[in-house]
Length: 347
Picture (tube, rainbow, N blue to C red):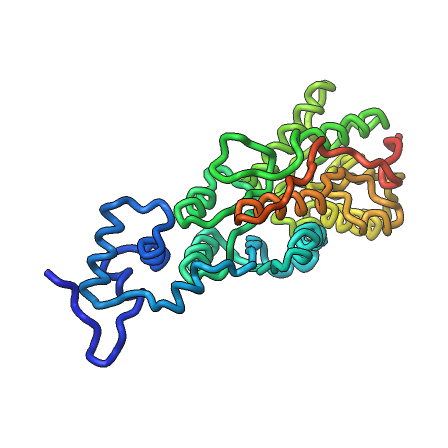
């Protein structure tokens, strides 16, 4: 039985074809462009629905879809206030743009609040042919995005520890827990025994890896964490976590933070409580952002070479999009940078 036709005088749309075939608009686009990983049964169903409705992609639109847009997407799942307060992404974008701009490519930044919104965005970007590829951030356990991007036929790279078995290539420094372990060893040499960790969201892979490294480094010294507190990276939660640690009986003498922005909030909270850094509480950050060297005291932190990771991700994605670019050298692991915010444990 043929699908109902559109009302007389109105040209059928790609959405009508998708609804009739029971698929997404991205799948319709893939069926006509011979892209993606559609089964032959699904492809045939889409083409039959389009035929019944009398729909076909216009020649100009098809030409636009098949042409390179010279645009890449960076989708960040963060609240806008968190993104605005975290220079990590400014450093990352600087590294990416440093590779894109000389080659005439642009970067489209999208902020999303949850997985459904993010997945729908990729579907829309692929269906409308607005980008040539995407940089994925914040690798998660049971992450559905790599498989989705592969199904959509959209080249992608994921920021995270290298993994040769991953669905899409990963770009990042290896041994993600090494920097945290080095930070703990540094604090232990300074005599600290009550060490707390203010972590990021527990669903992120790097949160799990770094927390495990933190706990293992203390365990090897015969110690347990004073506390491990998870946050959403926001200023509010960083301040709240620090205040809770300061209010505890026999407060910690050192706190390691999952990023530099939270460490800055931590230093301010300690100082507003009338305590000194590092006299009463030593503080360690993570990222080695420029702001850490502007503070007083200057921030001890873990360098994960954010700009270089962004540049390497951009070069790899450009090559996946068909550009002739050489691979960016990215070797080594995160390293501790010792500055003034850590000192001997108080008596």
